[in-house]
Structures are given as structure tokens and as C-alpha cells.
Length: 383
Image: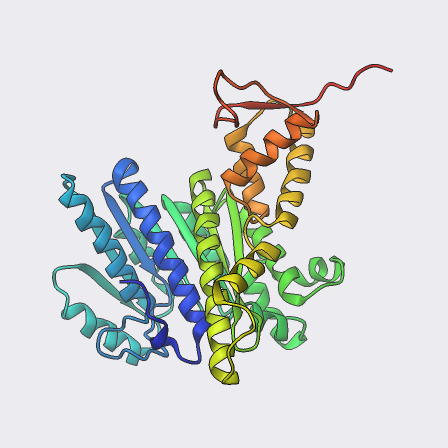
């Protein structure tokens, strides 16, 4: 069952976060179970429960959302004739009171393979890794700030076959990262004690943007993912960025699913903000809700004109540097950096071909590139 907005009063940004997790897990699990592996390991590194409204079922907690989503996928595929599908749940939490609640929750659901680890995530990595050696592992890392020993976590992620979703707490980072008193903890977060030099050498901008760039660079350096793409989640009552979800994956398909889910979740985020404004003002809005959603997502959402323009520029630069690059590779690299989907890039590539900026061959009847289509810079006529 998807998260219910009524359980997230005053923390609607967590509703958007869990909605994204729910929809991404559903898409990823269907793809995995129908091809790559019959085993799906879900690791919740900072499981809680923390601030929940549904204290009976924990339906507004990430671990409960994961169980319901992945079990729904497994059962639907069993009904279609698939066999041997297995989901394991590994929950880690440092707060003793929350650990007790997790264990009580697990005891009430003996039909699921649930294991609860007590203590900091970084102190349980070997134990979690030992029970996730086979199959695909999806790790959800959702700390309340930046108190994370990233070097240890990176080694853990690198050692497993899978993906991770990292909740980067942008608001807290933006507020505190420039303070010398937290330099050591930020260094642990970035797996770089000397991070300040790189930070200060960066162009002017928000602290969270610079720390995010440094974190992604360290993740790439540690080889935890081929692609790192992210989306911002705003506090709807204040309309400012609260967090950023970062997906780490080695799969171009993962990047495509991320942007597809982002496109859907962005619309729900606008709807949530619009509903709150209407309720708190006590007045009906000037424009219908669907029109507001369309306007805002067309302005700065996935596949908006501005993002397609950026995607076109990046596409042309990439092809110029790497003539003959396959469209599937190019699409994944562009989607990693720009909020667009493959359907948008098909049109962008076709428009650039028509404008004489790109060259690629299309089989008879085809109007857009296939994954294996190779793209080349245009040949400029001699003067």
C-alpha cells in the first residue's frame, strides 16, 4: 500500500520521500525478479521508527513501506507462475527503544525474513554483508544528518551487488557545514579529512550544493556506483529544499527508472503543496489543481524545456568528445546529470539530427534511435 498523506501531517516531505522509495522499489523489484536474480535483499541502515503517526502498523515508516511493496511484487509474480522468489529484510538502528520496537514488529510478522541489527550501521556492516552475499541488495541510507562514517559505508556498498538510495540532508548541511566546529564530522561524512581545501576552492554557492558535489566525487572515487543521480525534496509548508535523494547504481536502467519515478513524484509534491496552501489560506486557489501541477512541472520538472535544452547541450558535447557512442550509454550519462527521460532524449537526438548537428542511421520505419544506435558529430561542409 502506498504511503498515506494523512499520516504525515507536519512532515509532508517524508511522505514524498517514502512515495519515491515505494515506487522505485516496485519498479526495481519487478525488473530484478523477472531477469537478474530471484533474491532481493533490502537493507534499511537507519530504520527507526522515529516520528511515526501510525504506531500500530508503522505504515509511515520506511521499513514497513519496503515490506509491503516488495511483498506485493513477489506475490503478483508468484500468481503469474514465477517460483523461488525470496525477499530478505535487514534493519539496523542505534536507538535501543527503536530497536525494541523493530524487534516487536518483526516478531509479529514471522512469515517474513526479517533480521534486526542493534547499534550504529557502521558497526554492523560485516554482519549485514554476511547475510546479503547472494542476490541483489538495495540499501536505503537515511540518516538524520551527516553523522556517517562514509569510508566504511563505501567499502560495504562496493562489496555487494546492488544499488543504494542515500538521503542527503540538504537543509542541515546548508545550515552548518561552513562552521569550523563540525569540520571533523563533515570530513567523516565525505571520507576526506582534508575536505575544507576542496570546499573553499569551489565557486560561490550554497553549502549543500558544494558538499553534494564533493560527496558524489568521493562516491565515484570509491567506485560504489557508475551513475549517481539525485532529486530535491522540498518542505511544502516553507517551499525550501529539505533533502536530496541520491541513487547509486551501475545500471543505466536504474537511472531511467529514477527519472521516471521522479517525474511522477514531482507532481505529487506540487499537489501536496497546493493542498496545504488551500487548507491554510481557507480560500480556493485561482487555478485548478491539475493546471497548477502542469504549470509548475512544465517550468522546472523532469523533461521541461530548460532541462531538455541542457540535455541537448550535454549530448552534443559528449558526442563531440566520443564519436560513435551508443545511444543507451549516452542516454544514461545525460540522465544522470539532467532531469530528463529516454523519451525526451529520443526527441532531442532526432531534432539535432534534423538540424544537421548529429549523424546516426535509423533502420527502415524507425523514427528515433534504438539503444545500440551510434551517434556521430555532423560533418561540416568544406568552405
